[in-house]
Amino acid sequence: MTMEALEGQLTADFYNYETLLSDEERKLLVKARDFMRTDVKPLVNENWEAGTFPKELIGMFRESGLAGLPYEGYGEHKPAVSNLLTGMMAMEMSRTDASVATFFGVHNGLAMYSIASGGSQEQRDRWLPEMAAMDKIGAFAMTEPLGGSDVAGGMRTTAKRDGDSWILNGAKKWIGNATFADYVVVWARDLDDNHVKGFVVEKGTPGFVAEKIQGKTAFRIVENAEITLTDVRVPEENRLQGIDSFRDVAEILRATRGGVAWQALGVMVGAYELALDYAKERKQFGRPIARFQLVQDLLVKSLGNITASWGMLVQLARLQDAGIFQDEHSSLAKAFVTARMREVVAWSREIFGGNGIVLGYDVARFFADAEAIYSFEGTREMNTLIVGKAITGQSAFV
Image 1 (tube, rainbow, N blue to C red):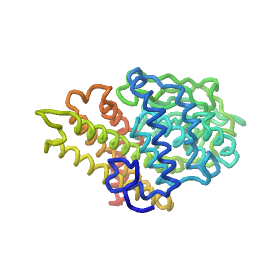
Image 2 (image 1 turned 30 degrees about the horizontal axis):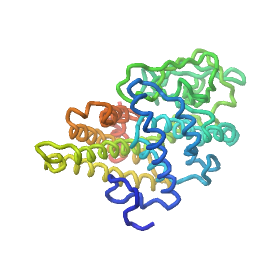
Image 3 (image 1 turned 180 degrees about the horizontal axis):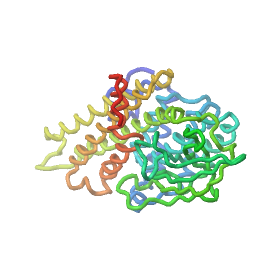
Image 4 (image 1 turned 90 degrees about the horizontal axis):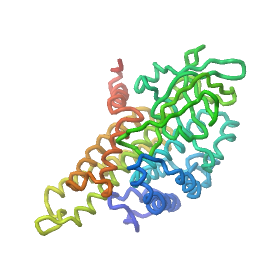
């Protein structure tokens, strides 16, 4: 593909990053862009304000054929697409709404990737086809009420082998999709060997209770849940056969953490585009505020953050496609891009003035949702320490 500007290219793509995709890949990206704008966007503000998840979204995504693309042999697109396209699609979805992008990312990323990378071939063939078709929805349960950053060494949810089954006990918190998911990947510490293992808990399993968390000021469309597990019996055939320690789990988080950085980029792009359009239309002192130097300063700083973050993520995707990316690569991207996102959403909201706190102008939603992205999949502080250990050879973890 040539480096000429593409028809319909985003105004925020100042360095023409989309030209790095093949023609076929860009068609899929544009398909996602049209789907989010035409089908999803009309549902967003009403449900964000109400704090509800529109269940019709599942059918819409099912019809879109966008699920399962990263997985060889599953989904409508074969073979699997590149990590660059997967990342740009995460960006594209978040550019419209971060909550909806998170619903999809939890299902298509965390849940499906856990099975694809940690399951046996039999398990992949059993679960992934119907998940790729979105006939079944997945969730990923790791964070606990008393364990977030320290969950690797302090996981309190336990698993005990009992014949051909496992008995799970404990609690999880902030688990997206868990109130309605068909398959929840639950991580628990084996009481016998003290290793973390993964289990696919199917909907309706006795002892599994998921209660929606109320009163959130971000990601209000996502149905985050607090889960309690009371003597939940899971067959051995539902234990992910390729997972035997938290090191195996870290392989999954390494990949999905990069996806969150792409999501943060999408929030930046969405907020910047809104601010740019508003600045061109809003008039003060008889002229568009886009003519004011201080407004242009905010817009250019925002575009700089977007362009730098996009370039970092392109290279991260290339490292991932080459199979040589490390924990510190995805951690640096997550820490850096989410920090830049925080700046951009604040500057964008500032350009709107008082209108920036009104949901109808959309930028307030981006401003609020950015705080959730900044915190999950490893806080800035934890990701900083991962990178710090890599560059100094010294661990600063407590």
